[in-house]
Length: 277
Ligand code: N1C
Image (cartoon, rainbow, N blue to C red; front, side, top):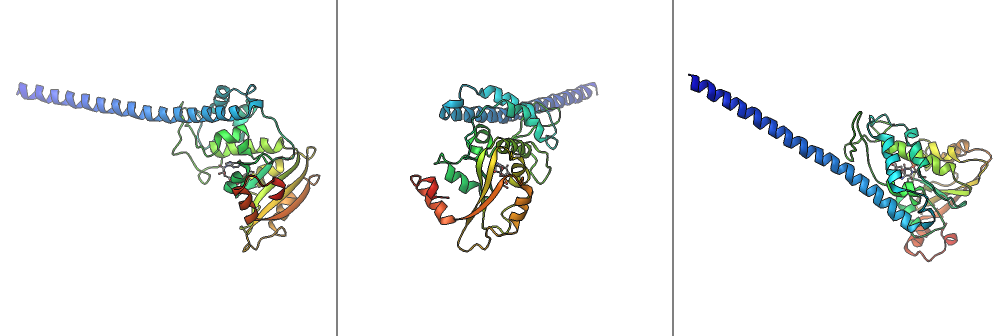
């Protein structure tokens, strides 16, 4: 009887040990995976930052990639991923120094791929993704959790789940800064295949148009990229909302640009900008 009881005790002890070992292994594996996603994002951010600074030697001495990473983490680490406001990125914005060239800023909405195919080979126009911050964070996803030190790159809330998510708030803040620092005559490439190319809820419509400084920006020209079969024109009622969102001191222009012409310029970087848009 006593032997039976001590065997049961040993079995129970063994069971407890097995459970503890399994839990410990799981914790280590999970911990490593989480850390790996943190480390992976960090190396992507630092790597892209260094690539940008190597190409743009005029700002390489005044920017510090490690400092930028630190200011970036400060915005969202340890916070509820649905409670990161755009202002959380203020320290990140301040940590970056860029030179602005007036008359080159190009905004876009629902034309991202085309715009970048166009600006990648040309210096005449600059989008947010051609600046240090936009270049670093383009297409990346990140978030953390309340009280956590971790960064996650998957399972983060999307635009439909909550508005104040770390990625959306970043683009709102970076876009506001890009527009507020713009000067001279600026343009926006919009999609003529849509019935309403201007949306007042887009980042362009809700943040950038309103952040243009009337004492620095002379005009905003909409470049409406249209295909032959498109029915939307510069006369579209959607541009009425743009005009009412724009400060009346800033002149408004709209020009229809044939899609084929833009495609042609994308495939031949030798064609001068002035012949493209
Ligand atoms: O909402 P949108 O376009 O009008 O935003 C585009 C507008 C541009 O002029 C940019 O300067 O706002 C800026 N911007 C980006 O640069 C950017 N890069 C990547 C805004 N959003 C950006 N993203 C992602 O694209 C962002 O995560 C969000 O999901 C889309 C917005 O694209 P949109 O609706 O075509």
